[in-house]
Length: 271
Image (cartoon, rainbow, N blue to C red; front, side, top):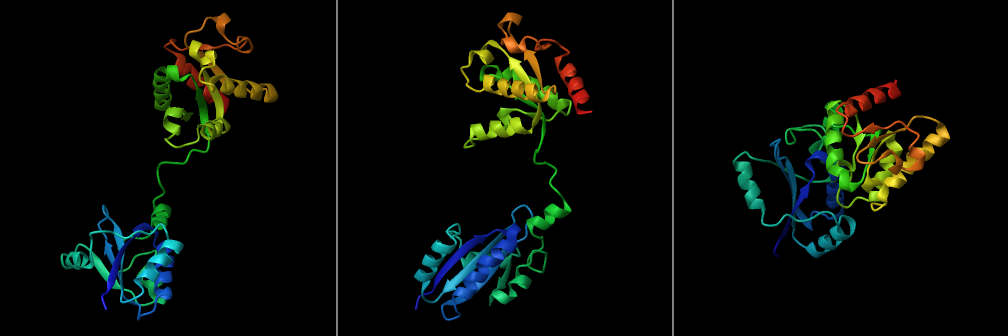
């Protein structure tokens, strides 16, 4: 009877999860059906990989149906065969280990290290060496602006970053496929102060967002009486500003000290 073989990629860095999958395979198919199972592991830190090789003497179609139902995210690796991996073992570019039953997987595929896996699971690395990049939970400022003025605001954003001010700027917070509404609402909710870059484009209402963002900060200020927005005037005459914002002292974008004044004011608000 002709044997059927499969090579399936596993996540080297999440062996805790992969043990469940491998264990299910070993428990589902007996030794008369699944006549061979091996792990092939590459410990090159720049190309970590782990592959599960399965050799079926019969019922391979049952396996395919089962994996499609229970593990649809698992896919075969094509044009890479056991002979290629055996050659890699001979060249010492990967390690190999036979699998017999699920009871041995805690030893054979540990989250820590062993003679086959020289690096621990990703979660262990993350605990030992926490990622430097943090997930933002709060921002000092929200940059509310018209898309027409984005280049000007980008320059301002970079100056704020040089002064280590945490700023929400849509150019770097919204990715393709994201819900714009959800992202903006999240940014507004997490920001202490709104920087309103008022311009002719801002008040024209063409973008649909700018005046809504300004109203959000204004209404919040009316409710809580806290200073929570600062107006930066790009190209408006005083009388062109929205009437309710004319009462607030604003900064001019072309003021060389504009960023410095903003940073100093934010520091006062945060003390």
